Length: 316
Ligand code: DGY
Image: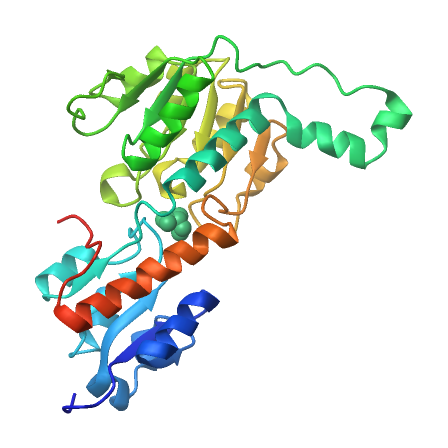
Protein backbone atom coordinates (compact mmCIF):
# COMPACT_ATOMS: atom_id res chain seq x y z
CA UNK A 1 0.00 0.00 0.00
CA UNK A 2 1.24 3.50 -0.79
CA UNK A 3 1.40 6.24 1.81
CA UNK A 4 -1.83 8.21 2.14
CA UNK A 5 -3.91 5.57 0.36
CA UNK A 6 -7.19 4.83 2.21
CA UNK A 7 -7.15 1.48 4.00
CA UNK A 8 -8.96 -1.13 1.92
CA UNK A 9 -11.20 -3.58 3.77
CA UNK A 10 -12.43 -6.66 1.95
CA UNK A 11 -16.03 -7.66 2.69
CA UNK A 12 -16.80 -11.01 1.09
CA UNK A 13 -20.42 -11.94 0.39
CA UNK A 14 -23.47 -10.78 2.25
CA UNK A 15 -22.79 -8.59 5.32
CA UNK A 16 -24.54 -6.63 8.06
CA UNK A 17 -25.86 -3.27 6.77
CA UNK A 18 -24.88 -1.21 9.79
CA UNK A 19 -21.35 -2.62 9.62
CA UNK A 20 -21.17 -1.78 5.92
CA UNK A 21 -22.21 1.82 6.66
CA UNK A 22 -19.52 2.16 9.31
CA UNK A 23 -16.84 0.58 7.10
CA UNK A 24 -17.74 3.01 4.31
CA UNK A 25 -17.24 5.95 6.70
CA UNK A 26 -13.79 4.90 7.88
CA UNK A 27 -12.28 2.82 5.06
CA UNK A 28 -12.41 1.94 1.42
CA UNK A 29 -14.66 -1.10 1.12
CA UNK A 30 -13.96 -3.68 -1.57
CA UNK A 31 -16.26 -6.63 -2.12
CA UNK A 32 -16.26 -10.07 -3.69
CA UNK A 33 -19.22 -12.45 -4.11
CA UNK A 34 -17.84 -14.94 -1.61
CA UNK A 35 -14.67 -15.64 0.35
CA UNK A 36 -12.99 -17.35 -2.59
CA UNK A 37 -9.30 -16.67 -3.27
CA UNK A 38 -9.95 -17.12 -7.02
CA UNK A 39 -11.97 -13.88 -6.94
CA UNK A 40 -9.09 -11.79 -5.53
CA UNK A 41 -7.86 -9.28 -8.10
CA UNK A 42 -4.33 -7.90 -8.50
CA UNK A 43 -5.61 -4.57 -7.12
CA UNK A 44 -6.96 -6.35 -4.02
CA UNK A 45 -3.67 -8.20 -3.55
CA UNK A 46 -1.94 -4.83 -3.45
CA UNK A 47 -4.39 -2.84 -1.33
CA UNK A 48 -6.43 -5.02 1.02
CA UNK A 49 -5.23 -4.77 4.64
CA UNK A 50 -8.32 -5.97 6.50
CA UNK A 51 -11.26 -8.35 6.15
CA UNK A 52 -14.66 -7.97 7.80
CA UNK A 53 -16.83 -11.05 7.49
CA UNK A 54 -19.30 -13.54 8.96
CA UNK A 55 -16.46 -16.11 8.85
CA UNK A 56 -15.46 -18.57 6.15
CA UNK A 57 -11.92 -17.23 5.88
CA UNK A 58 -9.45 -19.98 5.01
CA UNK A 59 -5.67 -20.09 4.64
CA UNK A 60 -5.78 -19.76 0.83
CA UNK A 61 -7.68 -16.48 1.02
CA UNK A 62 -5.21 -15.13 3.59
CA UNK A 63 -2.30 -16.18 1.37
CA UNK A 64 -3.90 -14.43 -1.62
CA UNK A 65 -3.77 -11.12 0.29
CA UNK A 66 -0.10 -10.43 1.17
CA UNK A 67 -0.87 -7.10 2.88
CA UNK A 68 -3.60 -8.54 5.12
CA UNK A 69 -3.17 -7.45 8.76
CA UNK A 70 -6.47 -8.18 10.44
CA UNK A 71 -9.61 -10.31 10.09
CA UNK A 72 -12.55 -8.83 12.02
CA UNK A 73 -15.01 -11.67 12.50
CA UNK A 74 -18.65 -10.69 12.94
CA UNK A 75 -19.71 -13.17 15.64
CA UNK A 76 -18.22 -14.56 18.81
CA UNK A 77 -17.68 -17.99 17.26
CA UNK A 78 -14.74 -17.93 14.84
CA UNK A 79 -14.48 -21.63 14.04
CA UNK A 80 -14.84 -20.86 10.32
CA UNK A 81 -11.74 -18.64 10.36
CA UNK A 82 -8.43 -20.52 10.16
CA UNK A 83 -7.09 -18.75 13.25
CA UNK A 84 -3.96 -20.88 13.55
CA UNK A 85 -2.94 -20.04 9.98
CA UNK A 86 -3.66 -16.38 10.75
CA UNK A 87 -1.44 -16.57 13.87
CA UNK A 88 1.38 -18.21 11.88
CA UNK A 89 1.08 -15.49 9.24
CA UNK A 90 1.06 -12.66 11.80
CA UNK A 91 -2.56 -11.76 10.99
CA UNK A 92 -4.71 -10.50 13.88
CA UNK A 93 -8.16 -12.10 14.31
CA UNK A 94 -10.89 -10.39 16.34
CA UNK A 95 -14.41 -11.49 17.26
CA UNK A 96 -17.48 -9.96 18.95
CA UNK A 97 -17.82 -11.30 22.51
CA UNK A 98 -19.89 -9.82 25.37
CA UNK A 99 -22.29 -7.71 23.27
CA UNK A 100 -24.33 -10.83 22.43
CA UNK A 101 -24.03 -12.78 25.69
CA UNK A 102 -27.42 -11.91 27.21
CA UNK A 103 -29.28 -12.20 23.89
CA UNK A 104 -27.97 -15.69 23.18
CA UNK A 105 -28.71 -16.76 26.78
CA UNK A 106 -32.28 -15.48 26.35
CA UNK A 107 -32.62 -17.51 23.16
CA UNK A 108 -31.31 -20.63 24.89
CA UNK A 109 -33.89 -20.34 27.67
CA UNK A 110 -36.68 -19.59 25.17
CA UNK A 111 -35.69 -22.62 23.13
CA UNK A 112 -35.51 -24.81 26.23
CA UNK A 113 -39.02 -23.90 27.40
CA UNK A 114 -40.41 -24.05 23.88
CA UNK A 115 -38.99 -27.56 23.50
CA UNK A 116 -39.93 -28.96 26.90
CA UNK A 117 -43.48 -27.57 26.87
CA UNK A 118 -44.02 -28.27 23.12
CA UNK A 119 -45.01 -24.66 22.48
CA UNK A 120 -43.97 -24.97 18.83
CA UNK A 121 -46.51 -27.80 18.39
CA UNK A 122 -49.18 -26.13 20.53
CA UNK A 123 -48.96 -22.99 18.38
CA UNK A 124 -49.24 -25.06 15.22
CA UNK A 125 -52.35 -26.69 16.78
CA UNK A 126 -53.95 -23.26 17.21
CA UNK A 127 -52.91 -21.96 13.78
CA UNK A 128 -54.13 -24.98 11.84
CA UNK A 129 -57.57 -24.76 13.47
CA UNK A 130 -57.22 -27.86 15.67
CA UNK A 131 -58.17 -26.00 18.86
CA UNK A 132 -61.60 -25.22 17.44
CA UNK A 133 -61.97 -28.59 15.70
CA UNK A 134 -60.43 -30.95 18.25
CA UNK A 135 -60.31 -29.10 21.57
CA UNK A 136 -57.42 -28.29 23.86
CA UNK A 137 -53.87 -29.21 22.90
CA UNK A 138 -52.70 -32.35 24.74
CA UNK A 139 -50.85 -32.02 28.04
CA UNK A 140 -47.12 -31.81 27.52
CA UNK A 141 -45.33 -34.95 28.57
CA UNK A 142 -42.30 -33.02 29.75
CA UNK A 143 -41.84 -30.22 32.25
CA UNK A 144 -39.01 -28.01 33.41
CA UNK A 145 -39.94 -28.84 37.00
CA UNK A 146 -37.51 -31.22 38.62
CA UNK A 147 -34.96 -31.04 35.80
CA UNK A 148 -31.25 -30.76 36.28
CA UNK A 149 -29.27 -29.00 33.61
CA UNK A 150 -25.78 -29.59 32.27
CA UNK A 151 -24.02 -26.87 30.36
CA UNK A 152 -21.43 -28.00 27.81
CA UNK A 153 -19.19 -24.94 27.38
CA UNK A 154 -19.20 -22.74 30.47
CA UNK A 155 -17.96 -19.48 29.01
CA UNK A 156 -19.63 -16.09 29.11
CA UNK A 157 -22.82 -17.32 27.43
CA UNK A 158 -22.90 -20.52 29.50
CA UNK A 159 -22.68 -18.46 32.67
CA UNK A 160 -25.50 -16.16 31.56
CA UNK A 161 -27.64 -19.25 30.89
CA UNK A 162 -26.72 -20.72 34.30
CA UNK A 163 -27.76 -17.50 36.07
CA UNK A 164 -31.15 -17.67 34.38
CA UNK A 165 -31.58 -21.35 35.26
CA UNK A 166 -30.90 -20.56 38.91
CA UNK A 167 -33.80 -18.12 38.82
CA UNK A 168 -35.94 -20.99 37.50
CA UNK A 169 -34.91 -23.09 40.50
CA UNK A 170 -32.97 -25.65 38.46
CA UNK A 171 -29.63 -27.12 39.55
CA UNK A 172 -26.75 -26.55 37.11
CA UNK A 173 -23.61 -28.55 36.39
CA UNK A 174 -21.10 -28.12 33.56
CA UNK A 175 -18.34 -29.58 31.48
CA UNK A 176 -15.41 -27.64 30.04
CA UNK A 177 -11.93 -28.81 29.14
CA UNK A 178 -10.83 -27.16 32.36
CA UNK A 179 -12.68 -26.35 35.56
CA UNK A 180 -13.54 -22.66 35.88
CA UNK A 181 -11.87 -21.32 39.00
CA UNK A 182 -14.13 -19.98 41.71
CA UNK A 183 -17.32 -21.26 40.09
CA UNK A 184 -19.74 -23.01 42.47
CA UNK A 185 -21.57 -25.09 39.84
CA UNK A 186 -20.64 -28.76 39.85
CA UNK A 187 -17.85 -29.53 37.38
CA UNK A 188 -17.61 -32.76 35.37
CA UNK A 189 -14.23 -33.47 33.77
CA UNK A 190 -15.94 -35.47 31.00
CA UNK A 191 -19.00 -34.74 28.88
CA UNK A 192 -20.16 -38.31 29.49
CA UNK A 193 -20.03 -37.77 33.27
CA UNK A 194 -22.07 -34.60 32.88
CA UNK A 195 -24.64 -36.32 30.65
CA UNK A 196 -25.02 -39.14 33.18
CA UNK A 197 -25.62 -36.65 36.00
CA UNK A 198 -28.30 -34.50 34.32
CA UNK A 199 -31.41 -34.94 32.16
CA UNK A 200 -31.08 -31.70 30.21
CA UNK A 201 -27.98 -30.80 28.22
CA UNK A 202 -27.42 -27.34 26.77
CA UNK A 203 -24.52 -27.10 24.35
CA UNK A 204 -22.85 -23.71 24.07
CA UNK A 205 -19.57 -25.32 23.00
CA UNK A 206 -17.59 -23.63 20.22
CA UNK A 207 -17.03 -25.37 16.88
CA UNK A 208 -13.68 -26.72 15.71
CA UNK A 209 -11.76 -29.98 15.73
CA UNK A 210 -11.77 -30.46 19.51
CA UNK A 211 -15.58 -30.46 19.80
CA UNK A 212 -16.46 -32.13 16.46
CA UNK A 213 -19.43 -34.52 17.02
CA UNK A 214 -18.75 -34.47 20.78
CA UNK A 215 -22.47 -34.95 21.44
CA UNK A 216 -22.74 -38.48 20.02
CA UNK A 217 -24.89 -41.59 20.56
CA UNK A 218 -23.14 -42.41 23.83
CA UNK A 219 -23.72 -38.95 25.31
CA UNK A 220 -27.38 -38.90 24.23
CA UNK A 221 -27.98 -42.33 25.69
CA UNK A 222 -26.38 -41.18 28.97
CA UNK A 223 -28.95 -38.35 29.12
CA UNK A 224 -31.72 -40.94 29.23
CA UNK A 225 -35.30 -41.30 28.08
CA UNK A 226 -36.42 -38.12 29.83
CA UNK A 227 -33.50 -36.31 28.25
CA UNK A 228 -33.69 -32.97 26.47
CA UNK A 229 -30.87 -31.65 24.31
CA UNK A 230 -30.58 -27.95 23.45
CA UNK A 231 -27.95 -26.61 21.03
CA UNK A 232 -27.24 -22.89 20.83
CA UNK A 233 -23.50 -23.24 20.05
CA UNK A 234 -22.44 -24.91 16.81
CA UNK A 235 -24.01 -27.72 14.81
CA UNK A 236 -20.62 -29.33 14.24
CA UNK A 237 -20.49 -30.32 17.94
CA UNK A 238 -23.31 -32.84 17.36
CA UNK A 239 -23.51 -36.14 15.52
CA UNK A 240 -26.78 -35.19 13.84
CA UNK A 241 -27.51 -38.70 12.55
CA UNK A 242 -27.12 -40.07 16.08
CA UNK A 243 -29.35 -37.27 17.42
CA UNK A 244 -32.09 -37.99 14.86
CA UNK A 245 -31.92 -41.69 15.75
CA UNK A 246 -32.04 -40.94 19.50
CA UNK A 247 -35.13 -38.76 18.98
CA UNK A 248 -36.82 -41.37 16.78
CA UNK A 249 -36.28 -44.35 19.07
CA UNK A 250 -36.92 -42.66 22.41
CA UNK A 251 -33.33 -42.69 23.63
CA UNK A 252 -33.99 -39.04 24.54
CA UNK A 253 -37.31 -37.19 24.73
CA UNK A 254 -36.81 -33.97 22.75
CA UNK A 255 -34.34 -31.50 21.25
CA UNK A 256 -34.27 -27.77 20.59
CA UNK A 257 -31.74 -26.72 17.95
CA UNK A 258 -30.70 -23.25 16.78
CA UNK A 259 -27.61 -24.45 14.91
CA UNK A 260 -26.83 -27.20 12.40
CA UNK A 261 -23.72 -28.77 10.95
CA UNK A 262 -24.37 -27.73 7.34
CA UNK A 263 -26.41 -24.50 7.55
CA UNK A 264 -28.71 -23.48 6.03
CA UNK A 265 -29.58 -27.07 5.23
CA UNK A 266 -31.19 -29.10 8.03
CA UNK A 267 -31.16 -32.92 7.94
CA UNK A 268 -34.49 -34.40 6.76
CA UNK A 269 -34.60 -36.70 9.79
CA UNK A 270 -34.55 -33.70 12.16
CA UNK A 271 -37.19 -31.84 10.11
CA UNK A 272 -39.38 -34.93 10.22
CA UNK A 273 -38.99 -35.55 13.98
CA UNK A 274 -42.09 -34.42 15.91
CA UNK A 275 -40.21 -33.80 19.17
CA UNK A 276 -37.90 -31.04 17.95
CA UNK A 277 -38.05 -27.27 18.03
CA UNK A 278 -35.89 -25.92 15.20
CA UNK A 279 -34.64 -22.35 14.70
CA UNK A 280 -32.61 -20.86 11.81
CA UNK A 281 -29.52 -19.76 13.82
CA UNK A 282 -31.15 -16.74 15.46
CA UNK A 283 -29.36 -16.86 18.84
CA UNK A 284 -28.03 -13.31 18.59
CA UNK A 285 -30.38 -12.13 15.85
CA UNK A 286 -32.15 -9.06 17.23
CA UNK A 287 -31.60 -5.70 15.53
CA UNK A 288 -30.31 -4.38 18.86
CA UNK A 289 -27.67 -7.05 19.38
CA UNK A 290 -26.59 -7.33 15.74
CA UNK A 291 -25.98 -3.57 15.78
CA UNK A 292 -23.76 -3.99 18.86
CA UNK A 293 -21.88 -6.80 17.12
CA UNK A 294 -21.50 -4.68 13.97
CA UNK A 295 -20.08 -1.77 15.98
CA UNK A 296 -17.61 -4.01 17.82
CA UNK A 297 -16.55 -5.69 14.58
CA UNK A 298 -15.79 -2.34 12.91
CA UNK A 299 -14.37 -0.73 16.10
CA UNK A 300 -11.76 -3.50 16.08
CA UNK A 301 -10.70 -2.44 12.57
CA UNK A 302 -10.70 1.25 13.48
CA UNK A 303 -8.64 0.68 16.62
CA UNK A 304 -6.22 -1.58 14.78
CA UNK A 305 -5.52 0.87 11.99
CA UNK A 306 -5.38 3.88 14.37
CA UNK A 307 -3.11 2.40 17.02
CA UNK A 308 -2.48 -1.31 16.32
CA UNK A 309 -4.63 -2.18 19.32
CA UNK A 310 -7.43 -4.69 18.70
CA UNK A 311 -10.30 -4.40 21.20
CA UNK A 312 -11.31 -8.05 21.30
CA UNK A 313 -8.62 -10.31 19.81
CA UNK A 314 -9.52 -13.99 19.82
CA UNK A 315 -7.72 -16.06 22.48
CA UNK A 316 -4.40 -17.67 21.41
C1 DGY B 1 -21.83 -16.08 16.84
O1 DGY B 1 -21.66 -14.93 17.23
O2 DGY B 1 -20.93 -16.92 16.82
C2 DGY B 1 -23.20 -16.43 16.39
O3 DGY B 1 -23.34 -17.79 16.19
C3 DGY B 1 -23.50 -15.71 15.11
O4 DGY B 1 -22.76 -16.30 14.08
